[in-house]
Length: 431
Figure (cartoon, rainbow, N blue to C red):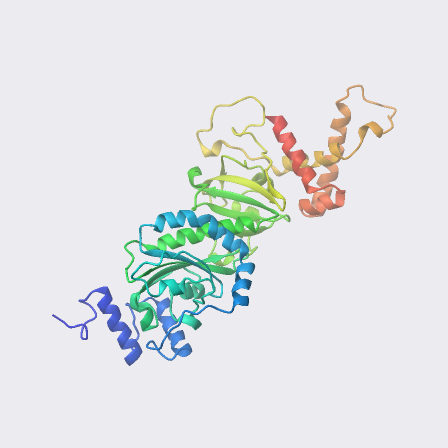
């Protein structure tokens, strides 16, 4: 049988990795086909940063002030992590794994470690403030994930330092609404290899934390949830987009980018209009129900189930439904929808007319106006005329400002809250 020193093809993964590692660090031969390009690039960087793989590595915390600053700066991230932590601990409870959360620079800001008897590295590496970046501890999953922006695993001898070869790690990045890296979630096991796909698990929970972070950072956004199955709207697989008060597509999570067919680079950039990306106008998206779901056809033709929610700094604000659950505008109950295509969204003209009523009915004081020579006999006619005048005024103002509801509201001296309340009241009246 071929010995480990002469063959790369007939040995176990551990033996092939050990051989590739020795040949790279001792002979300079590239570990092609044995380790991923991301790990190899990390080895190359670490060779420039450190004395060598045999050097001593120390898992030391940063200064107290820097650790406190990291915790304070990432309060939203830590809060999102704590919300997912009970479920994550339940999932990992019977394994040999611990979970860790670092900030964008590699400083540990959250961890779970039970201190098992065989663990030597984990108890010291999971202390708050320990720096897990490449510059401090060499090649690790958190460091590589932070560099590449992708979920990655670093197993055993793939770590740069010899002292860390007992570790098995998988990590995934976490971004904010602007697409910037804000943290990394890591799952690690010491001396015991993973017996499951740790990269998939850590990627799932990193996405869940990221979703919570996105929503917490959306104080003035219309948040739209959608997926191909309505059952997934409350799951970690939900697609999320945020639309700001100016009607611009402010952010989207990874699931949304994949369903919309947009590259990851556009996740935090306003490179597409709302209608180009979602296949629906802002008025239609604002009409999505806050609970339950409604069908929505995306611009790429994909039919999904969607839900909308208006968020404000003082808490959740319900979206205004523009149609009833059966997709009809008359109050007569209709049979349940059997096809997603059966739901009709309101048109921009209908929504604009509804917005106009807020100014026409709630702002003017009809009682204080002097009666004209042709005073109406029907008490309902003044409201009708005011609606017509208000609709015309709103139409002109919106046209002047290119459909920007915020600027139109400022010009007319009415609040967005008044508009949303009026839209809600009219929608409820239709029911």
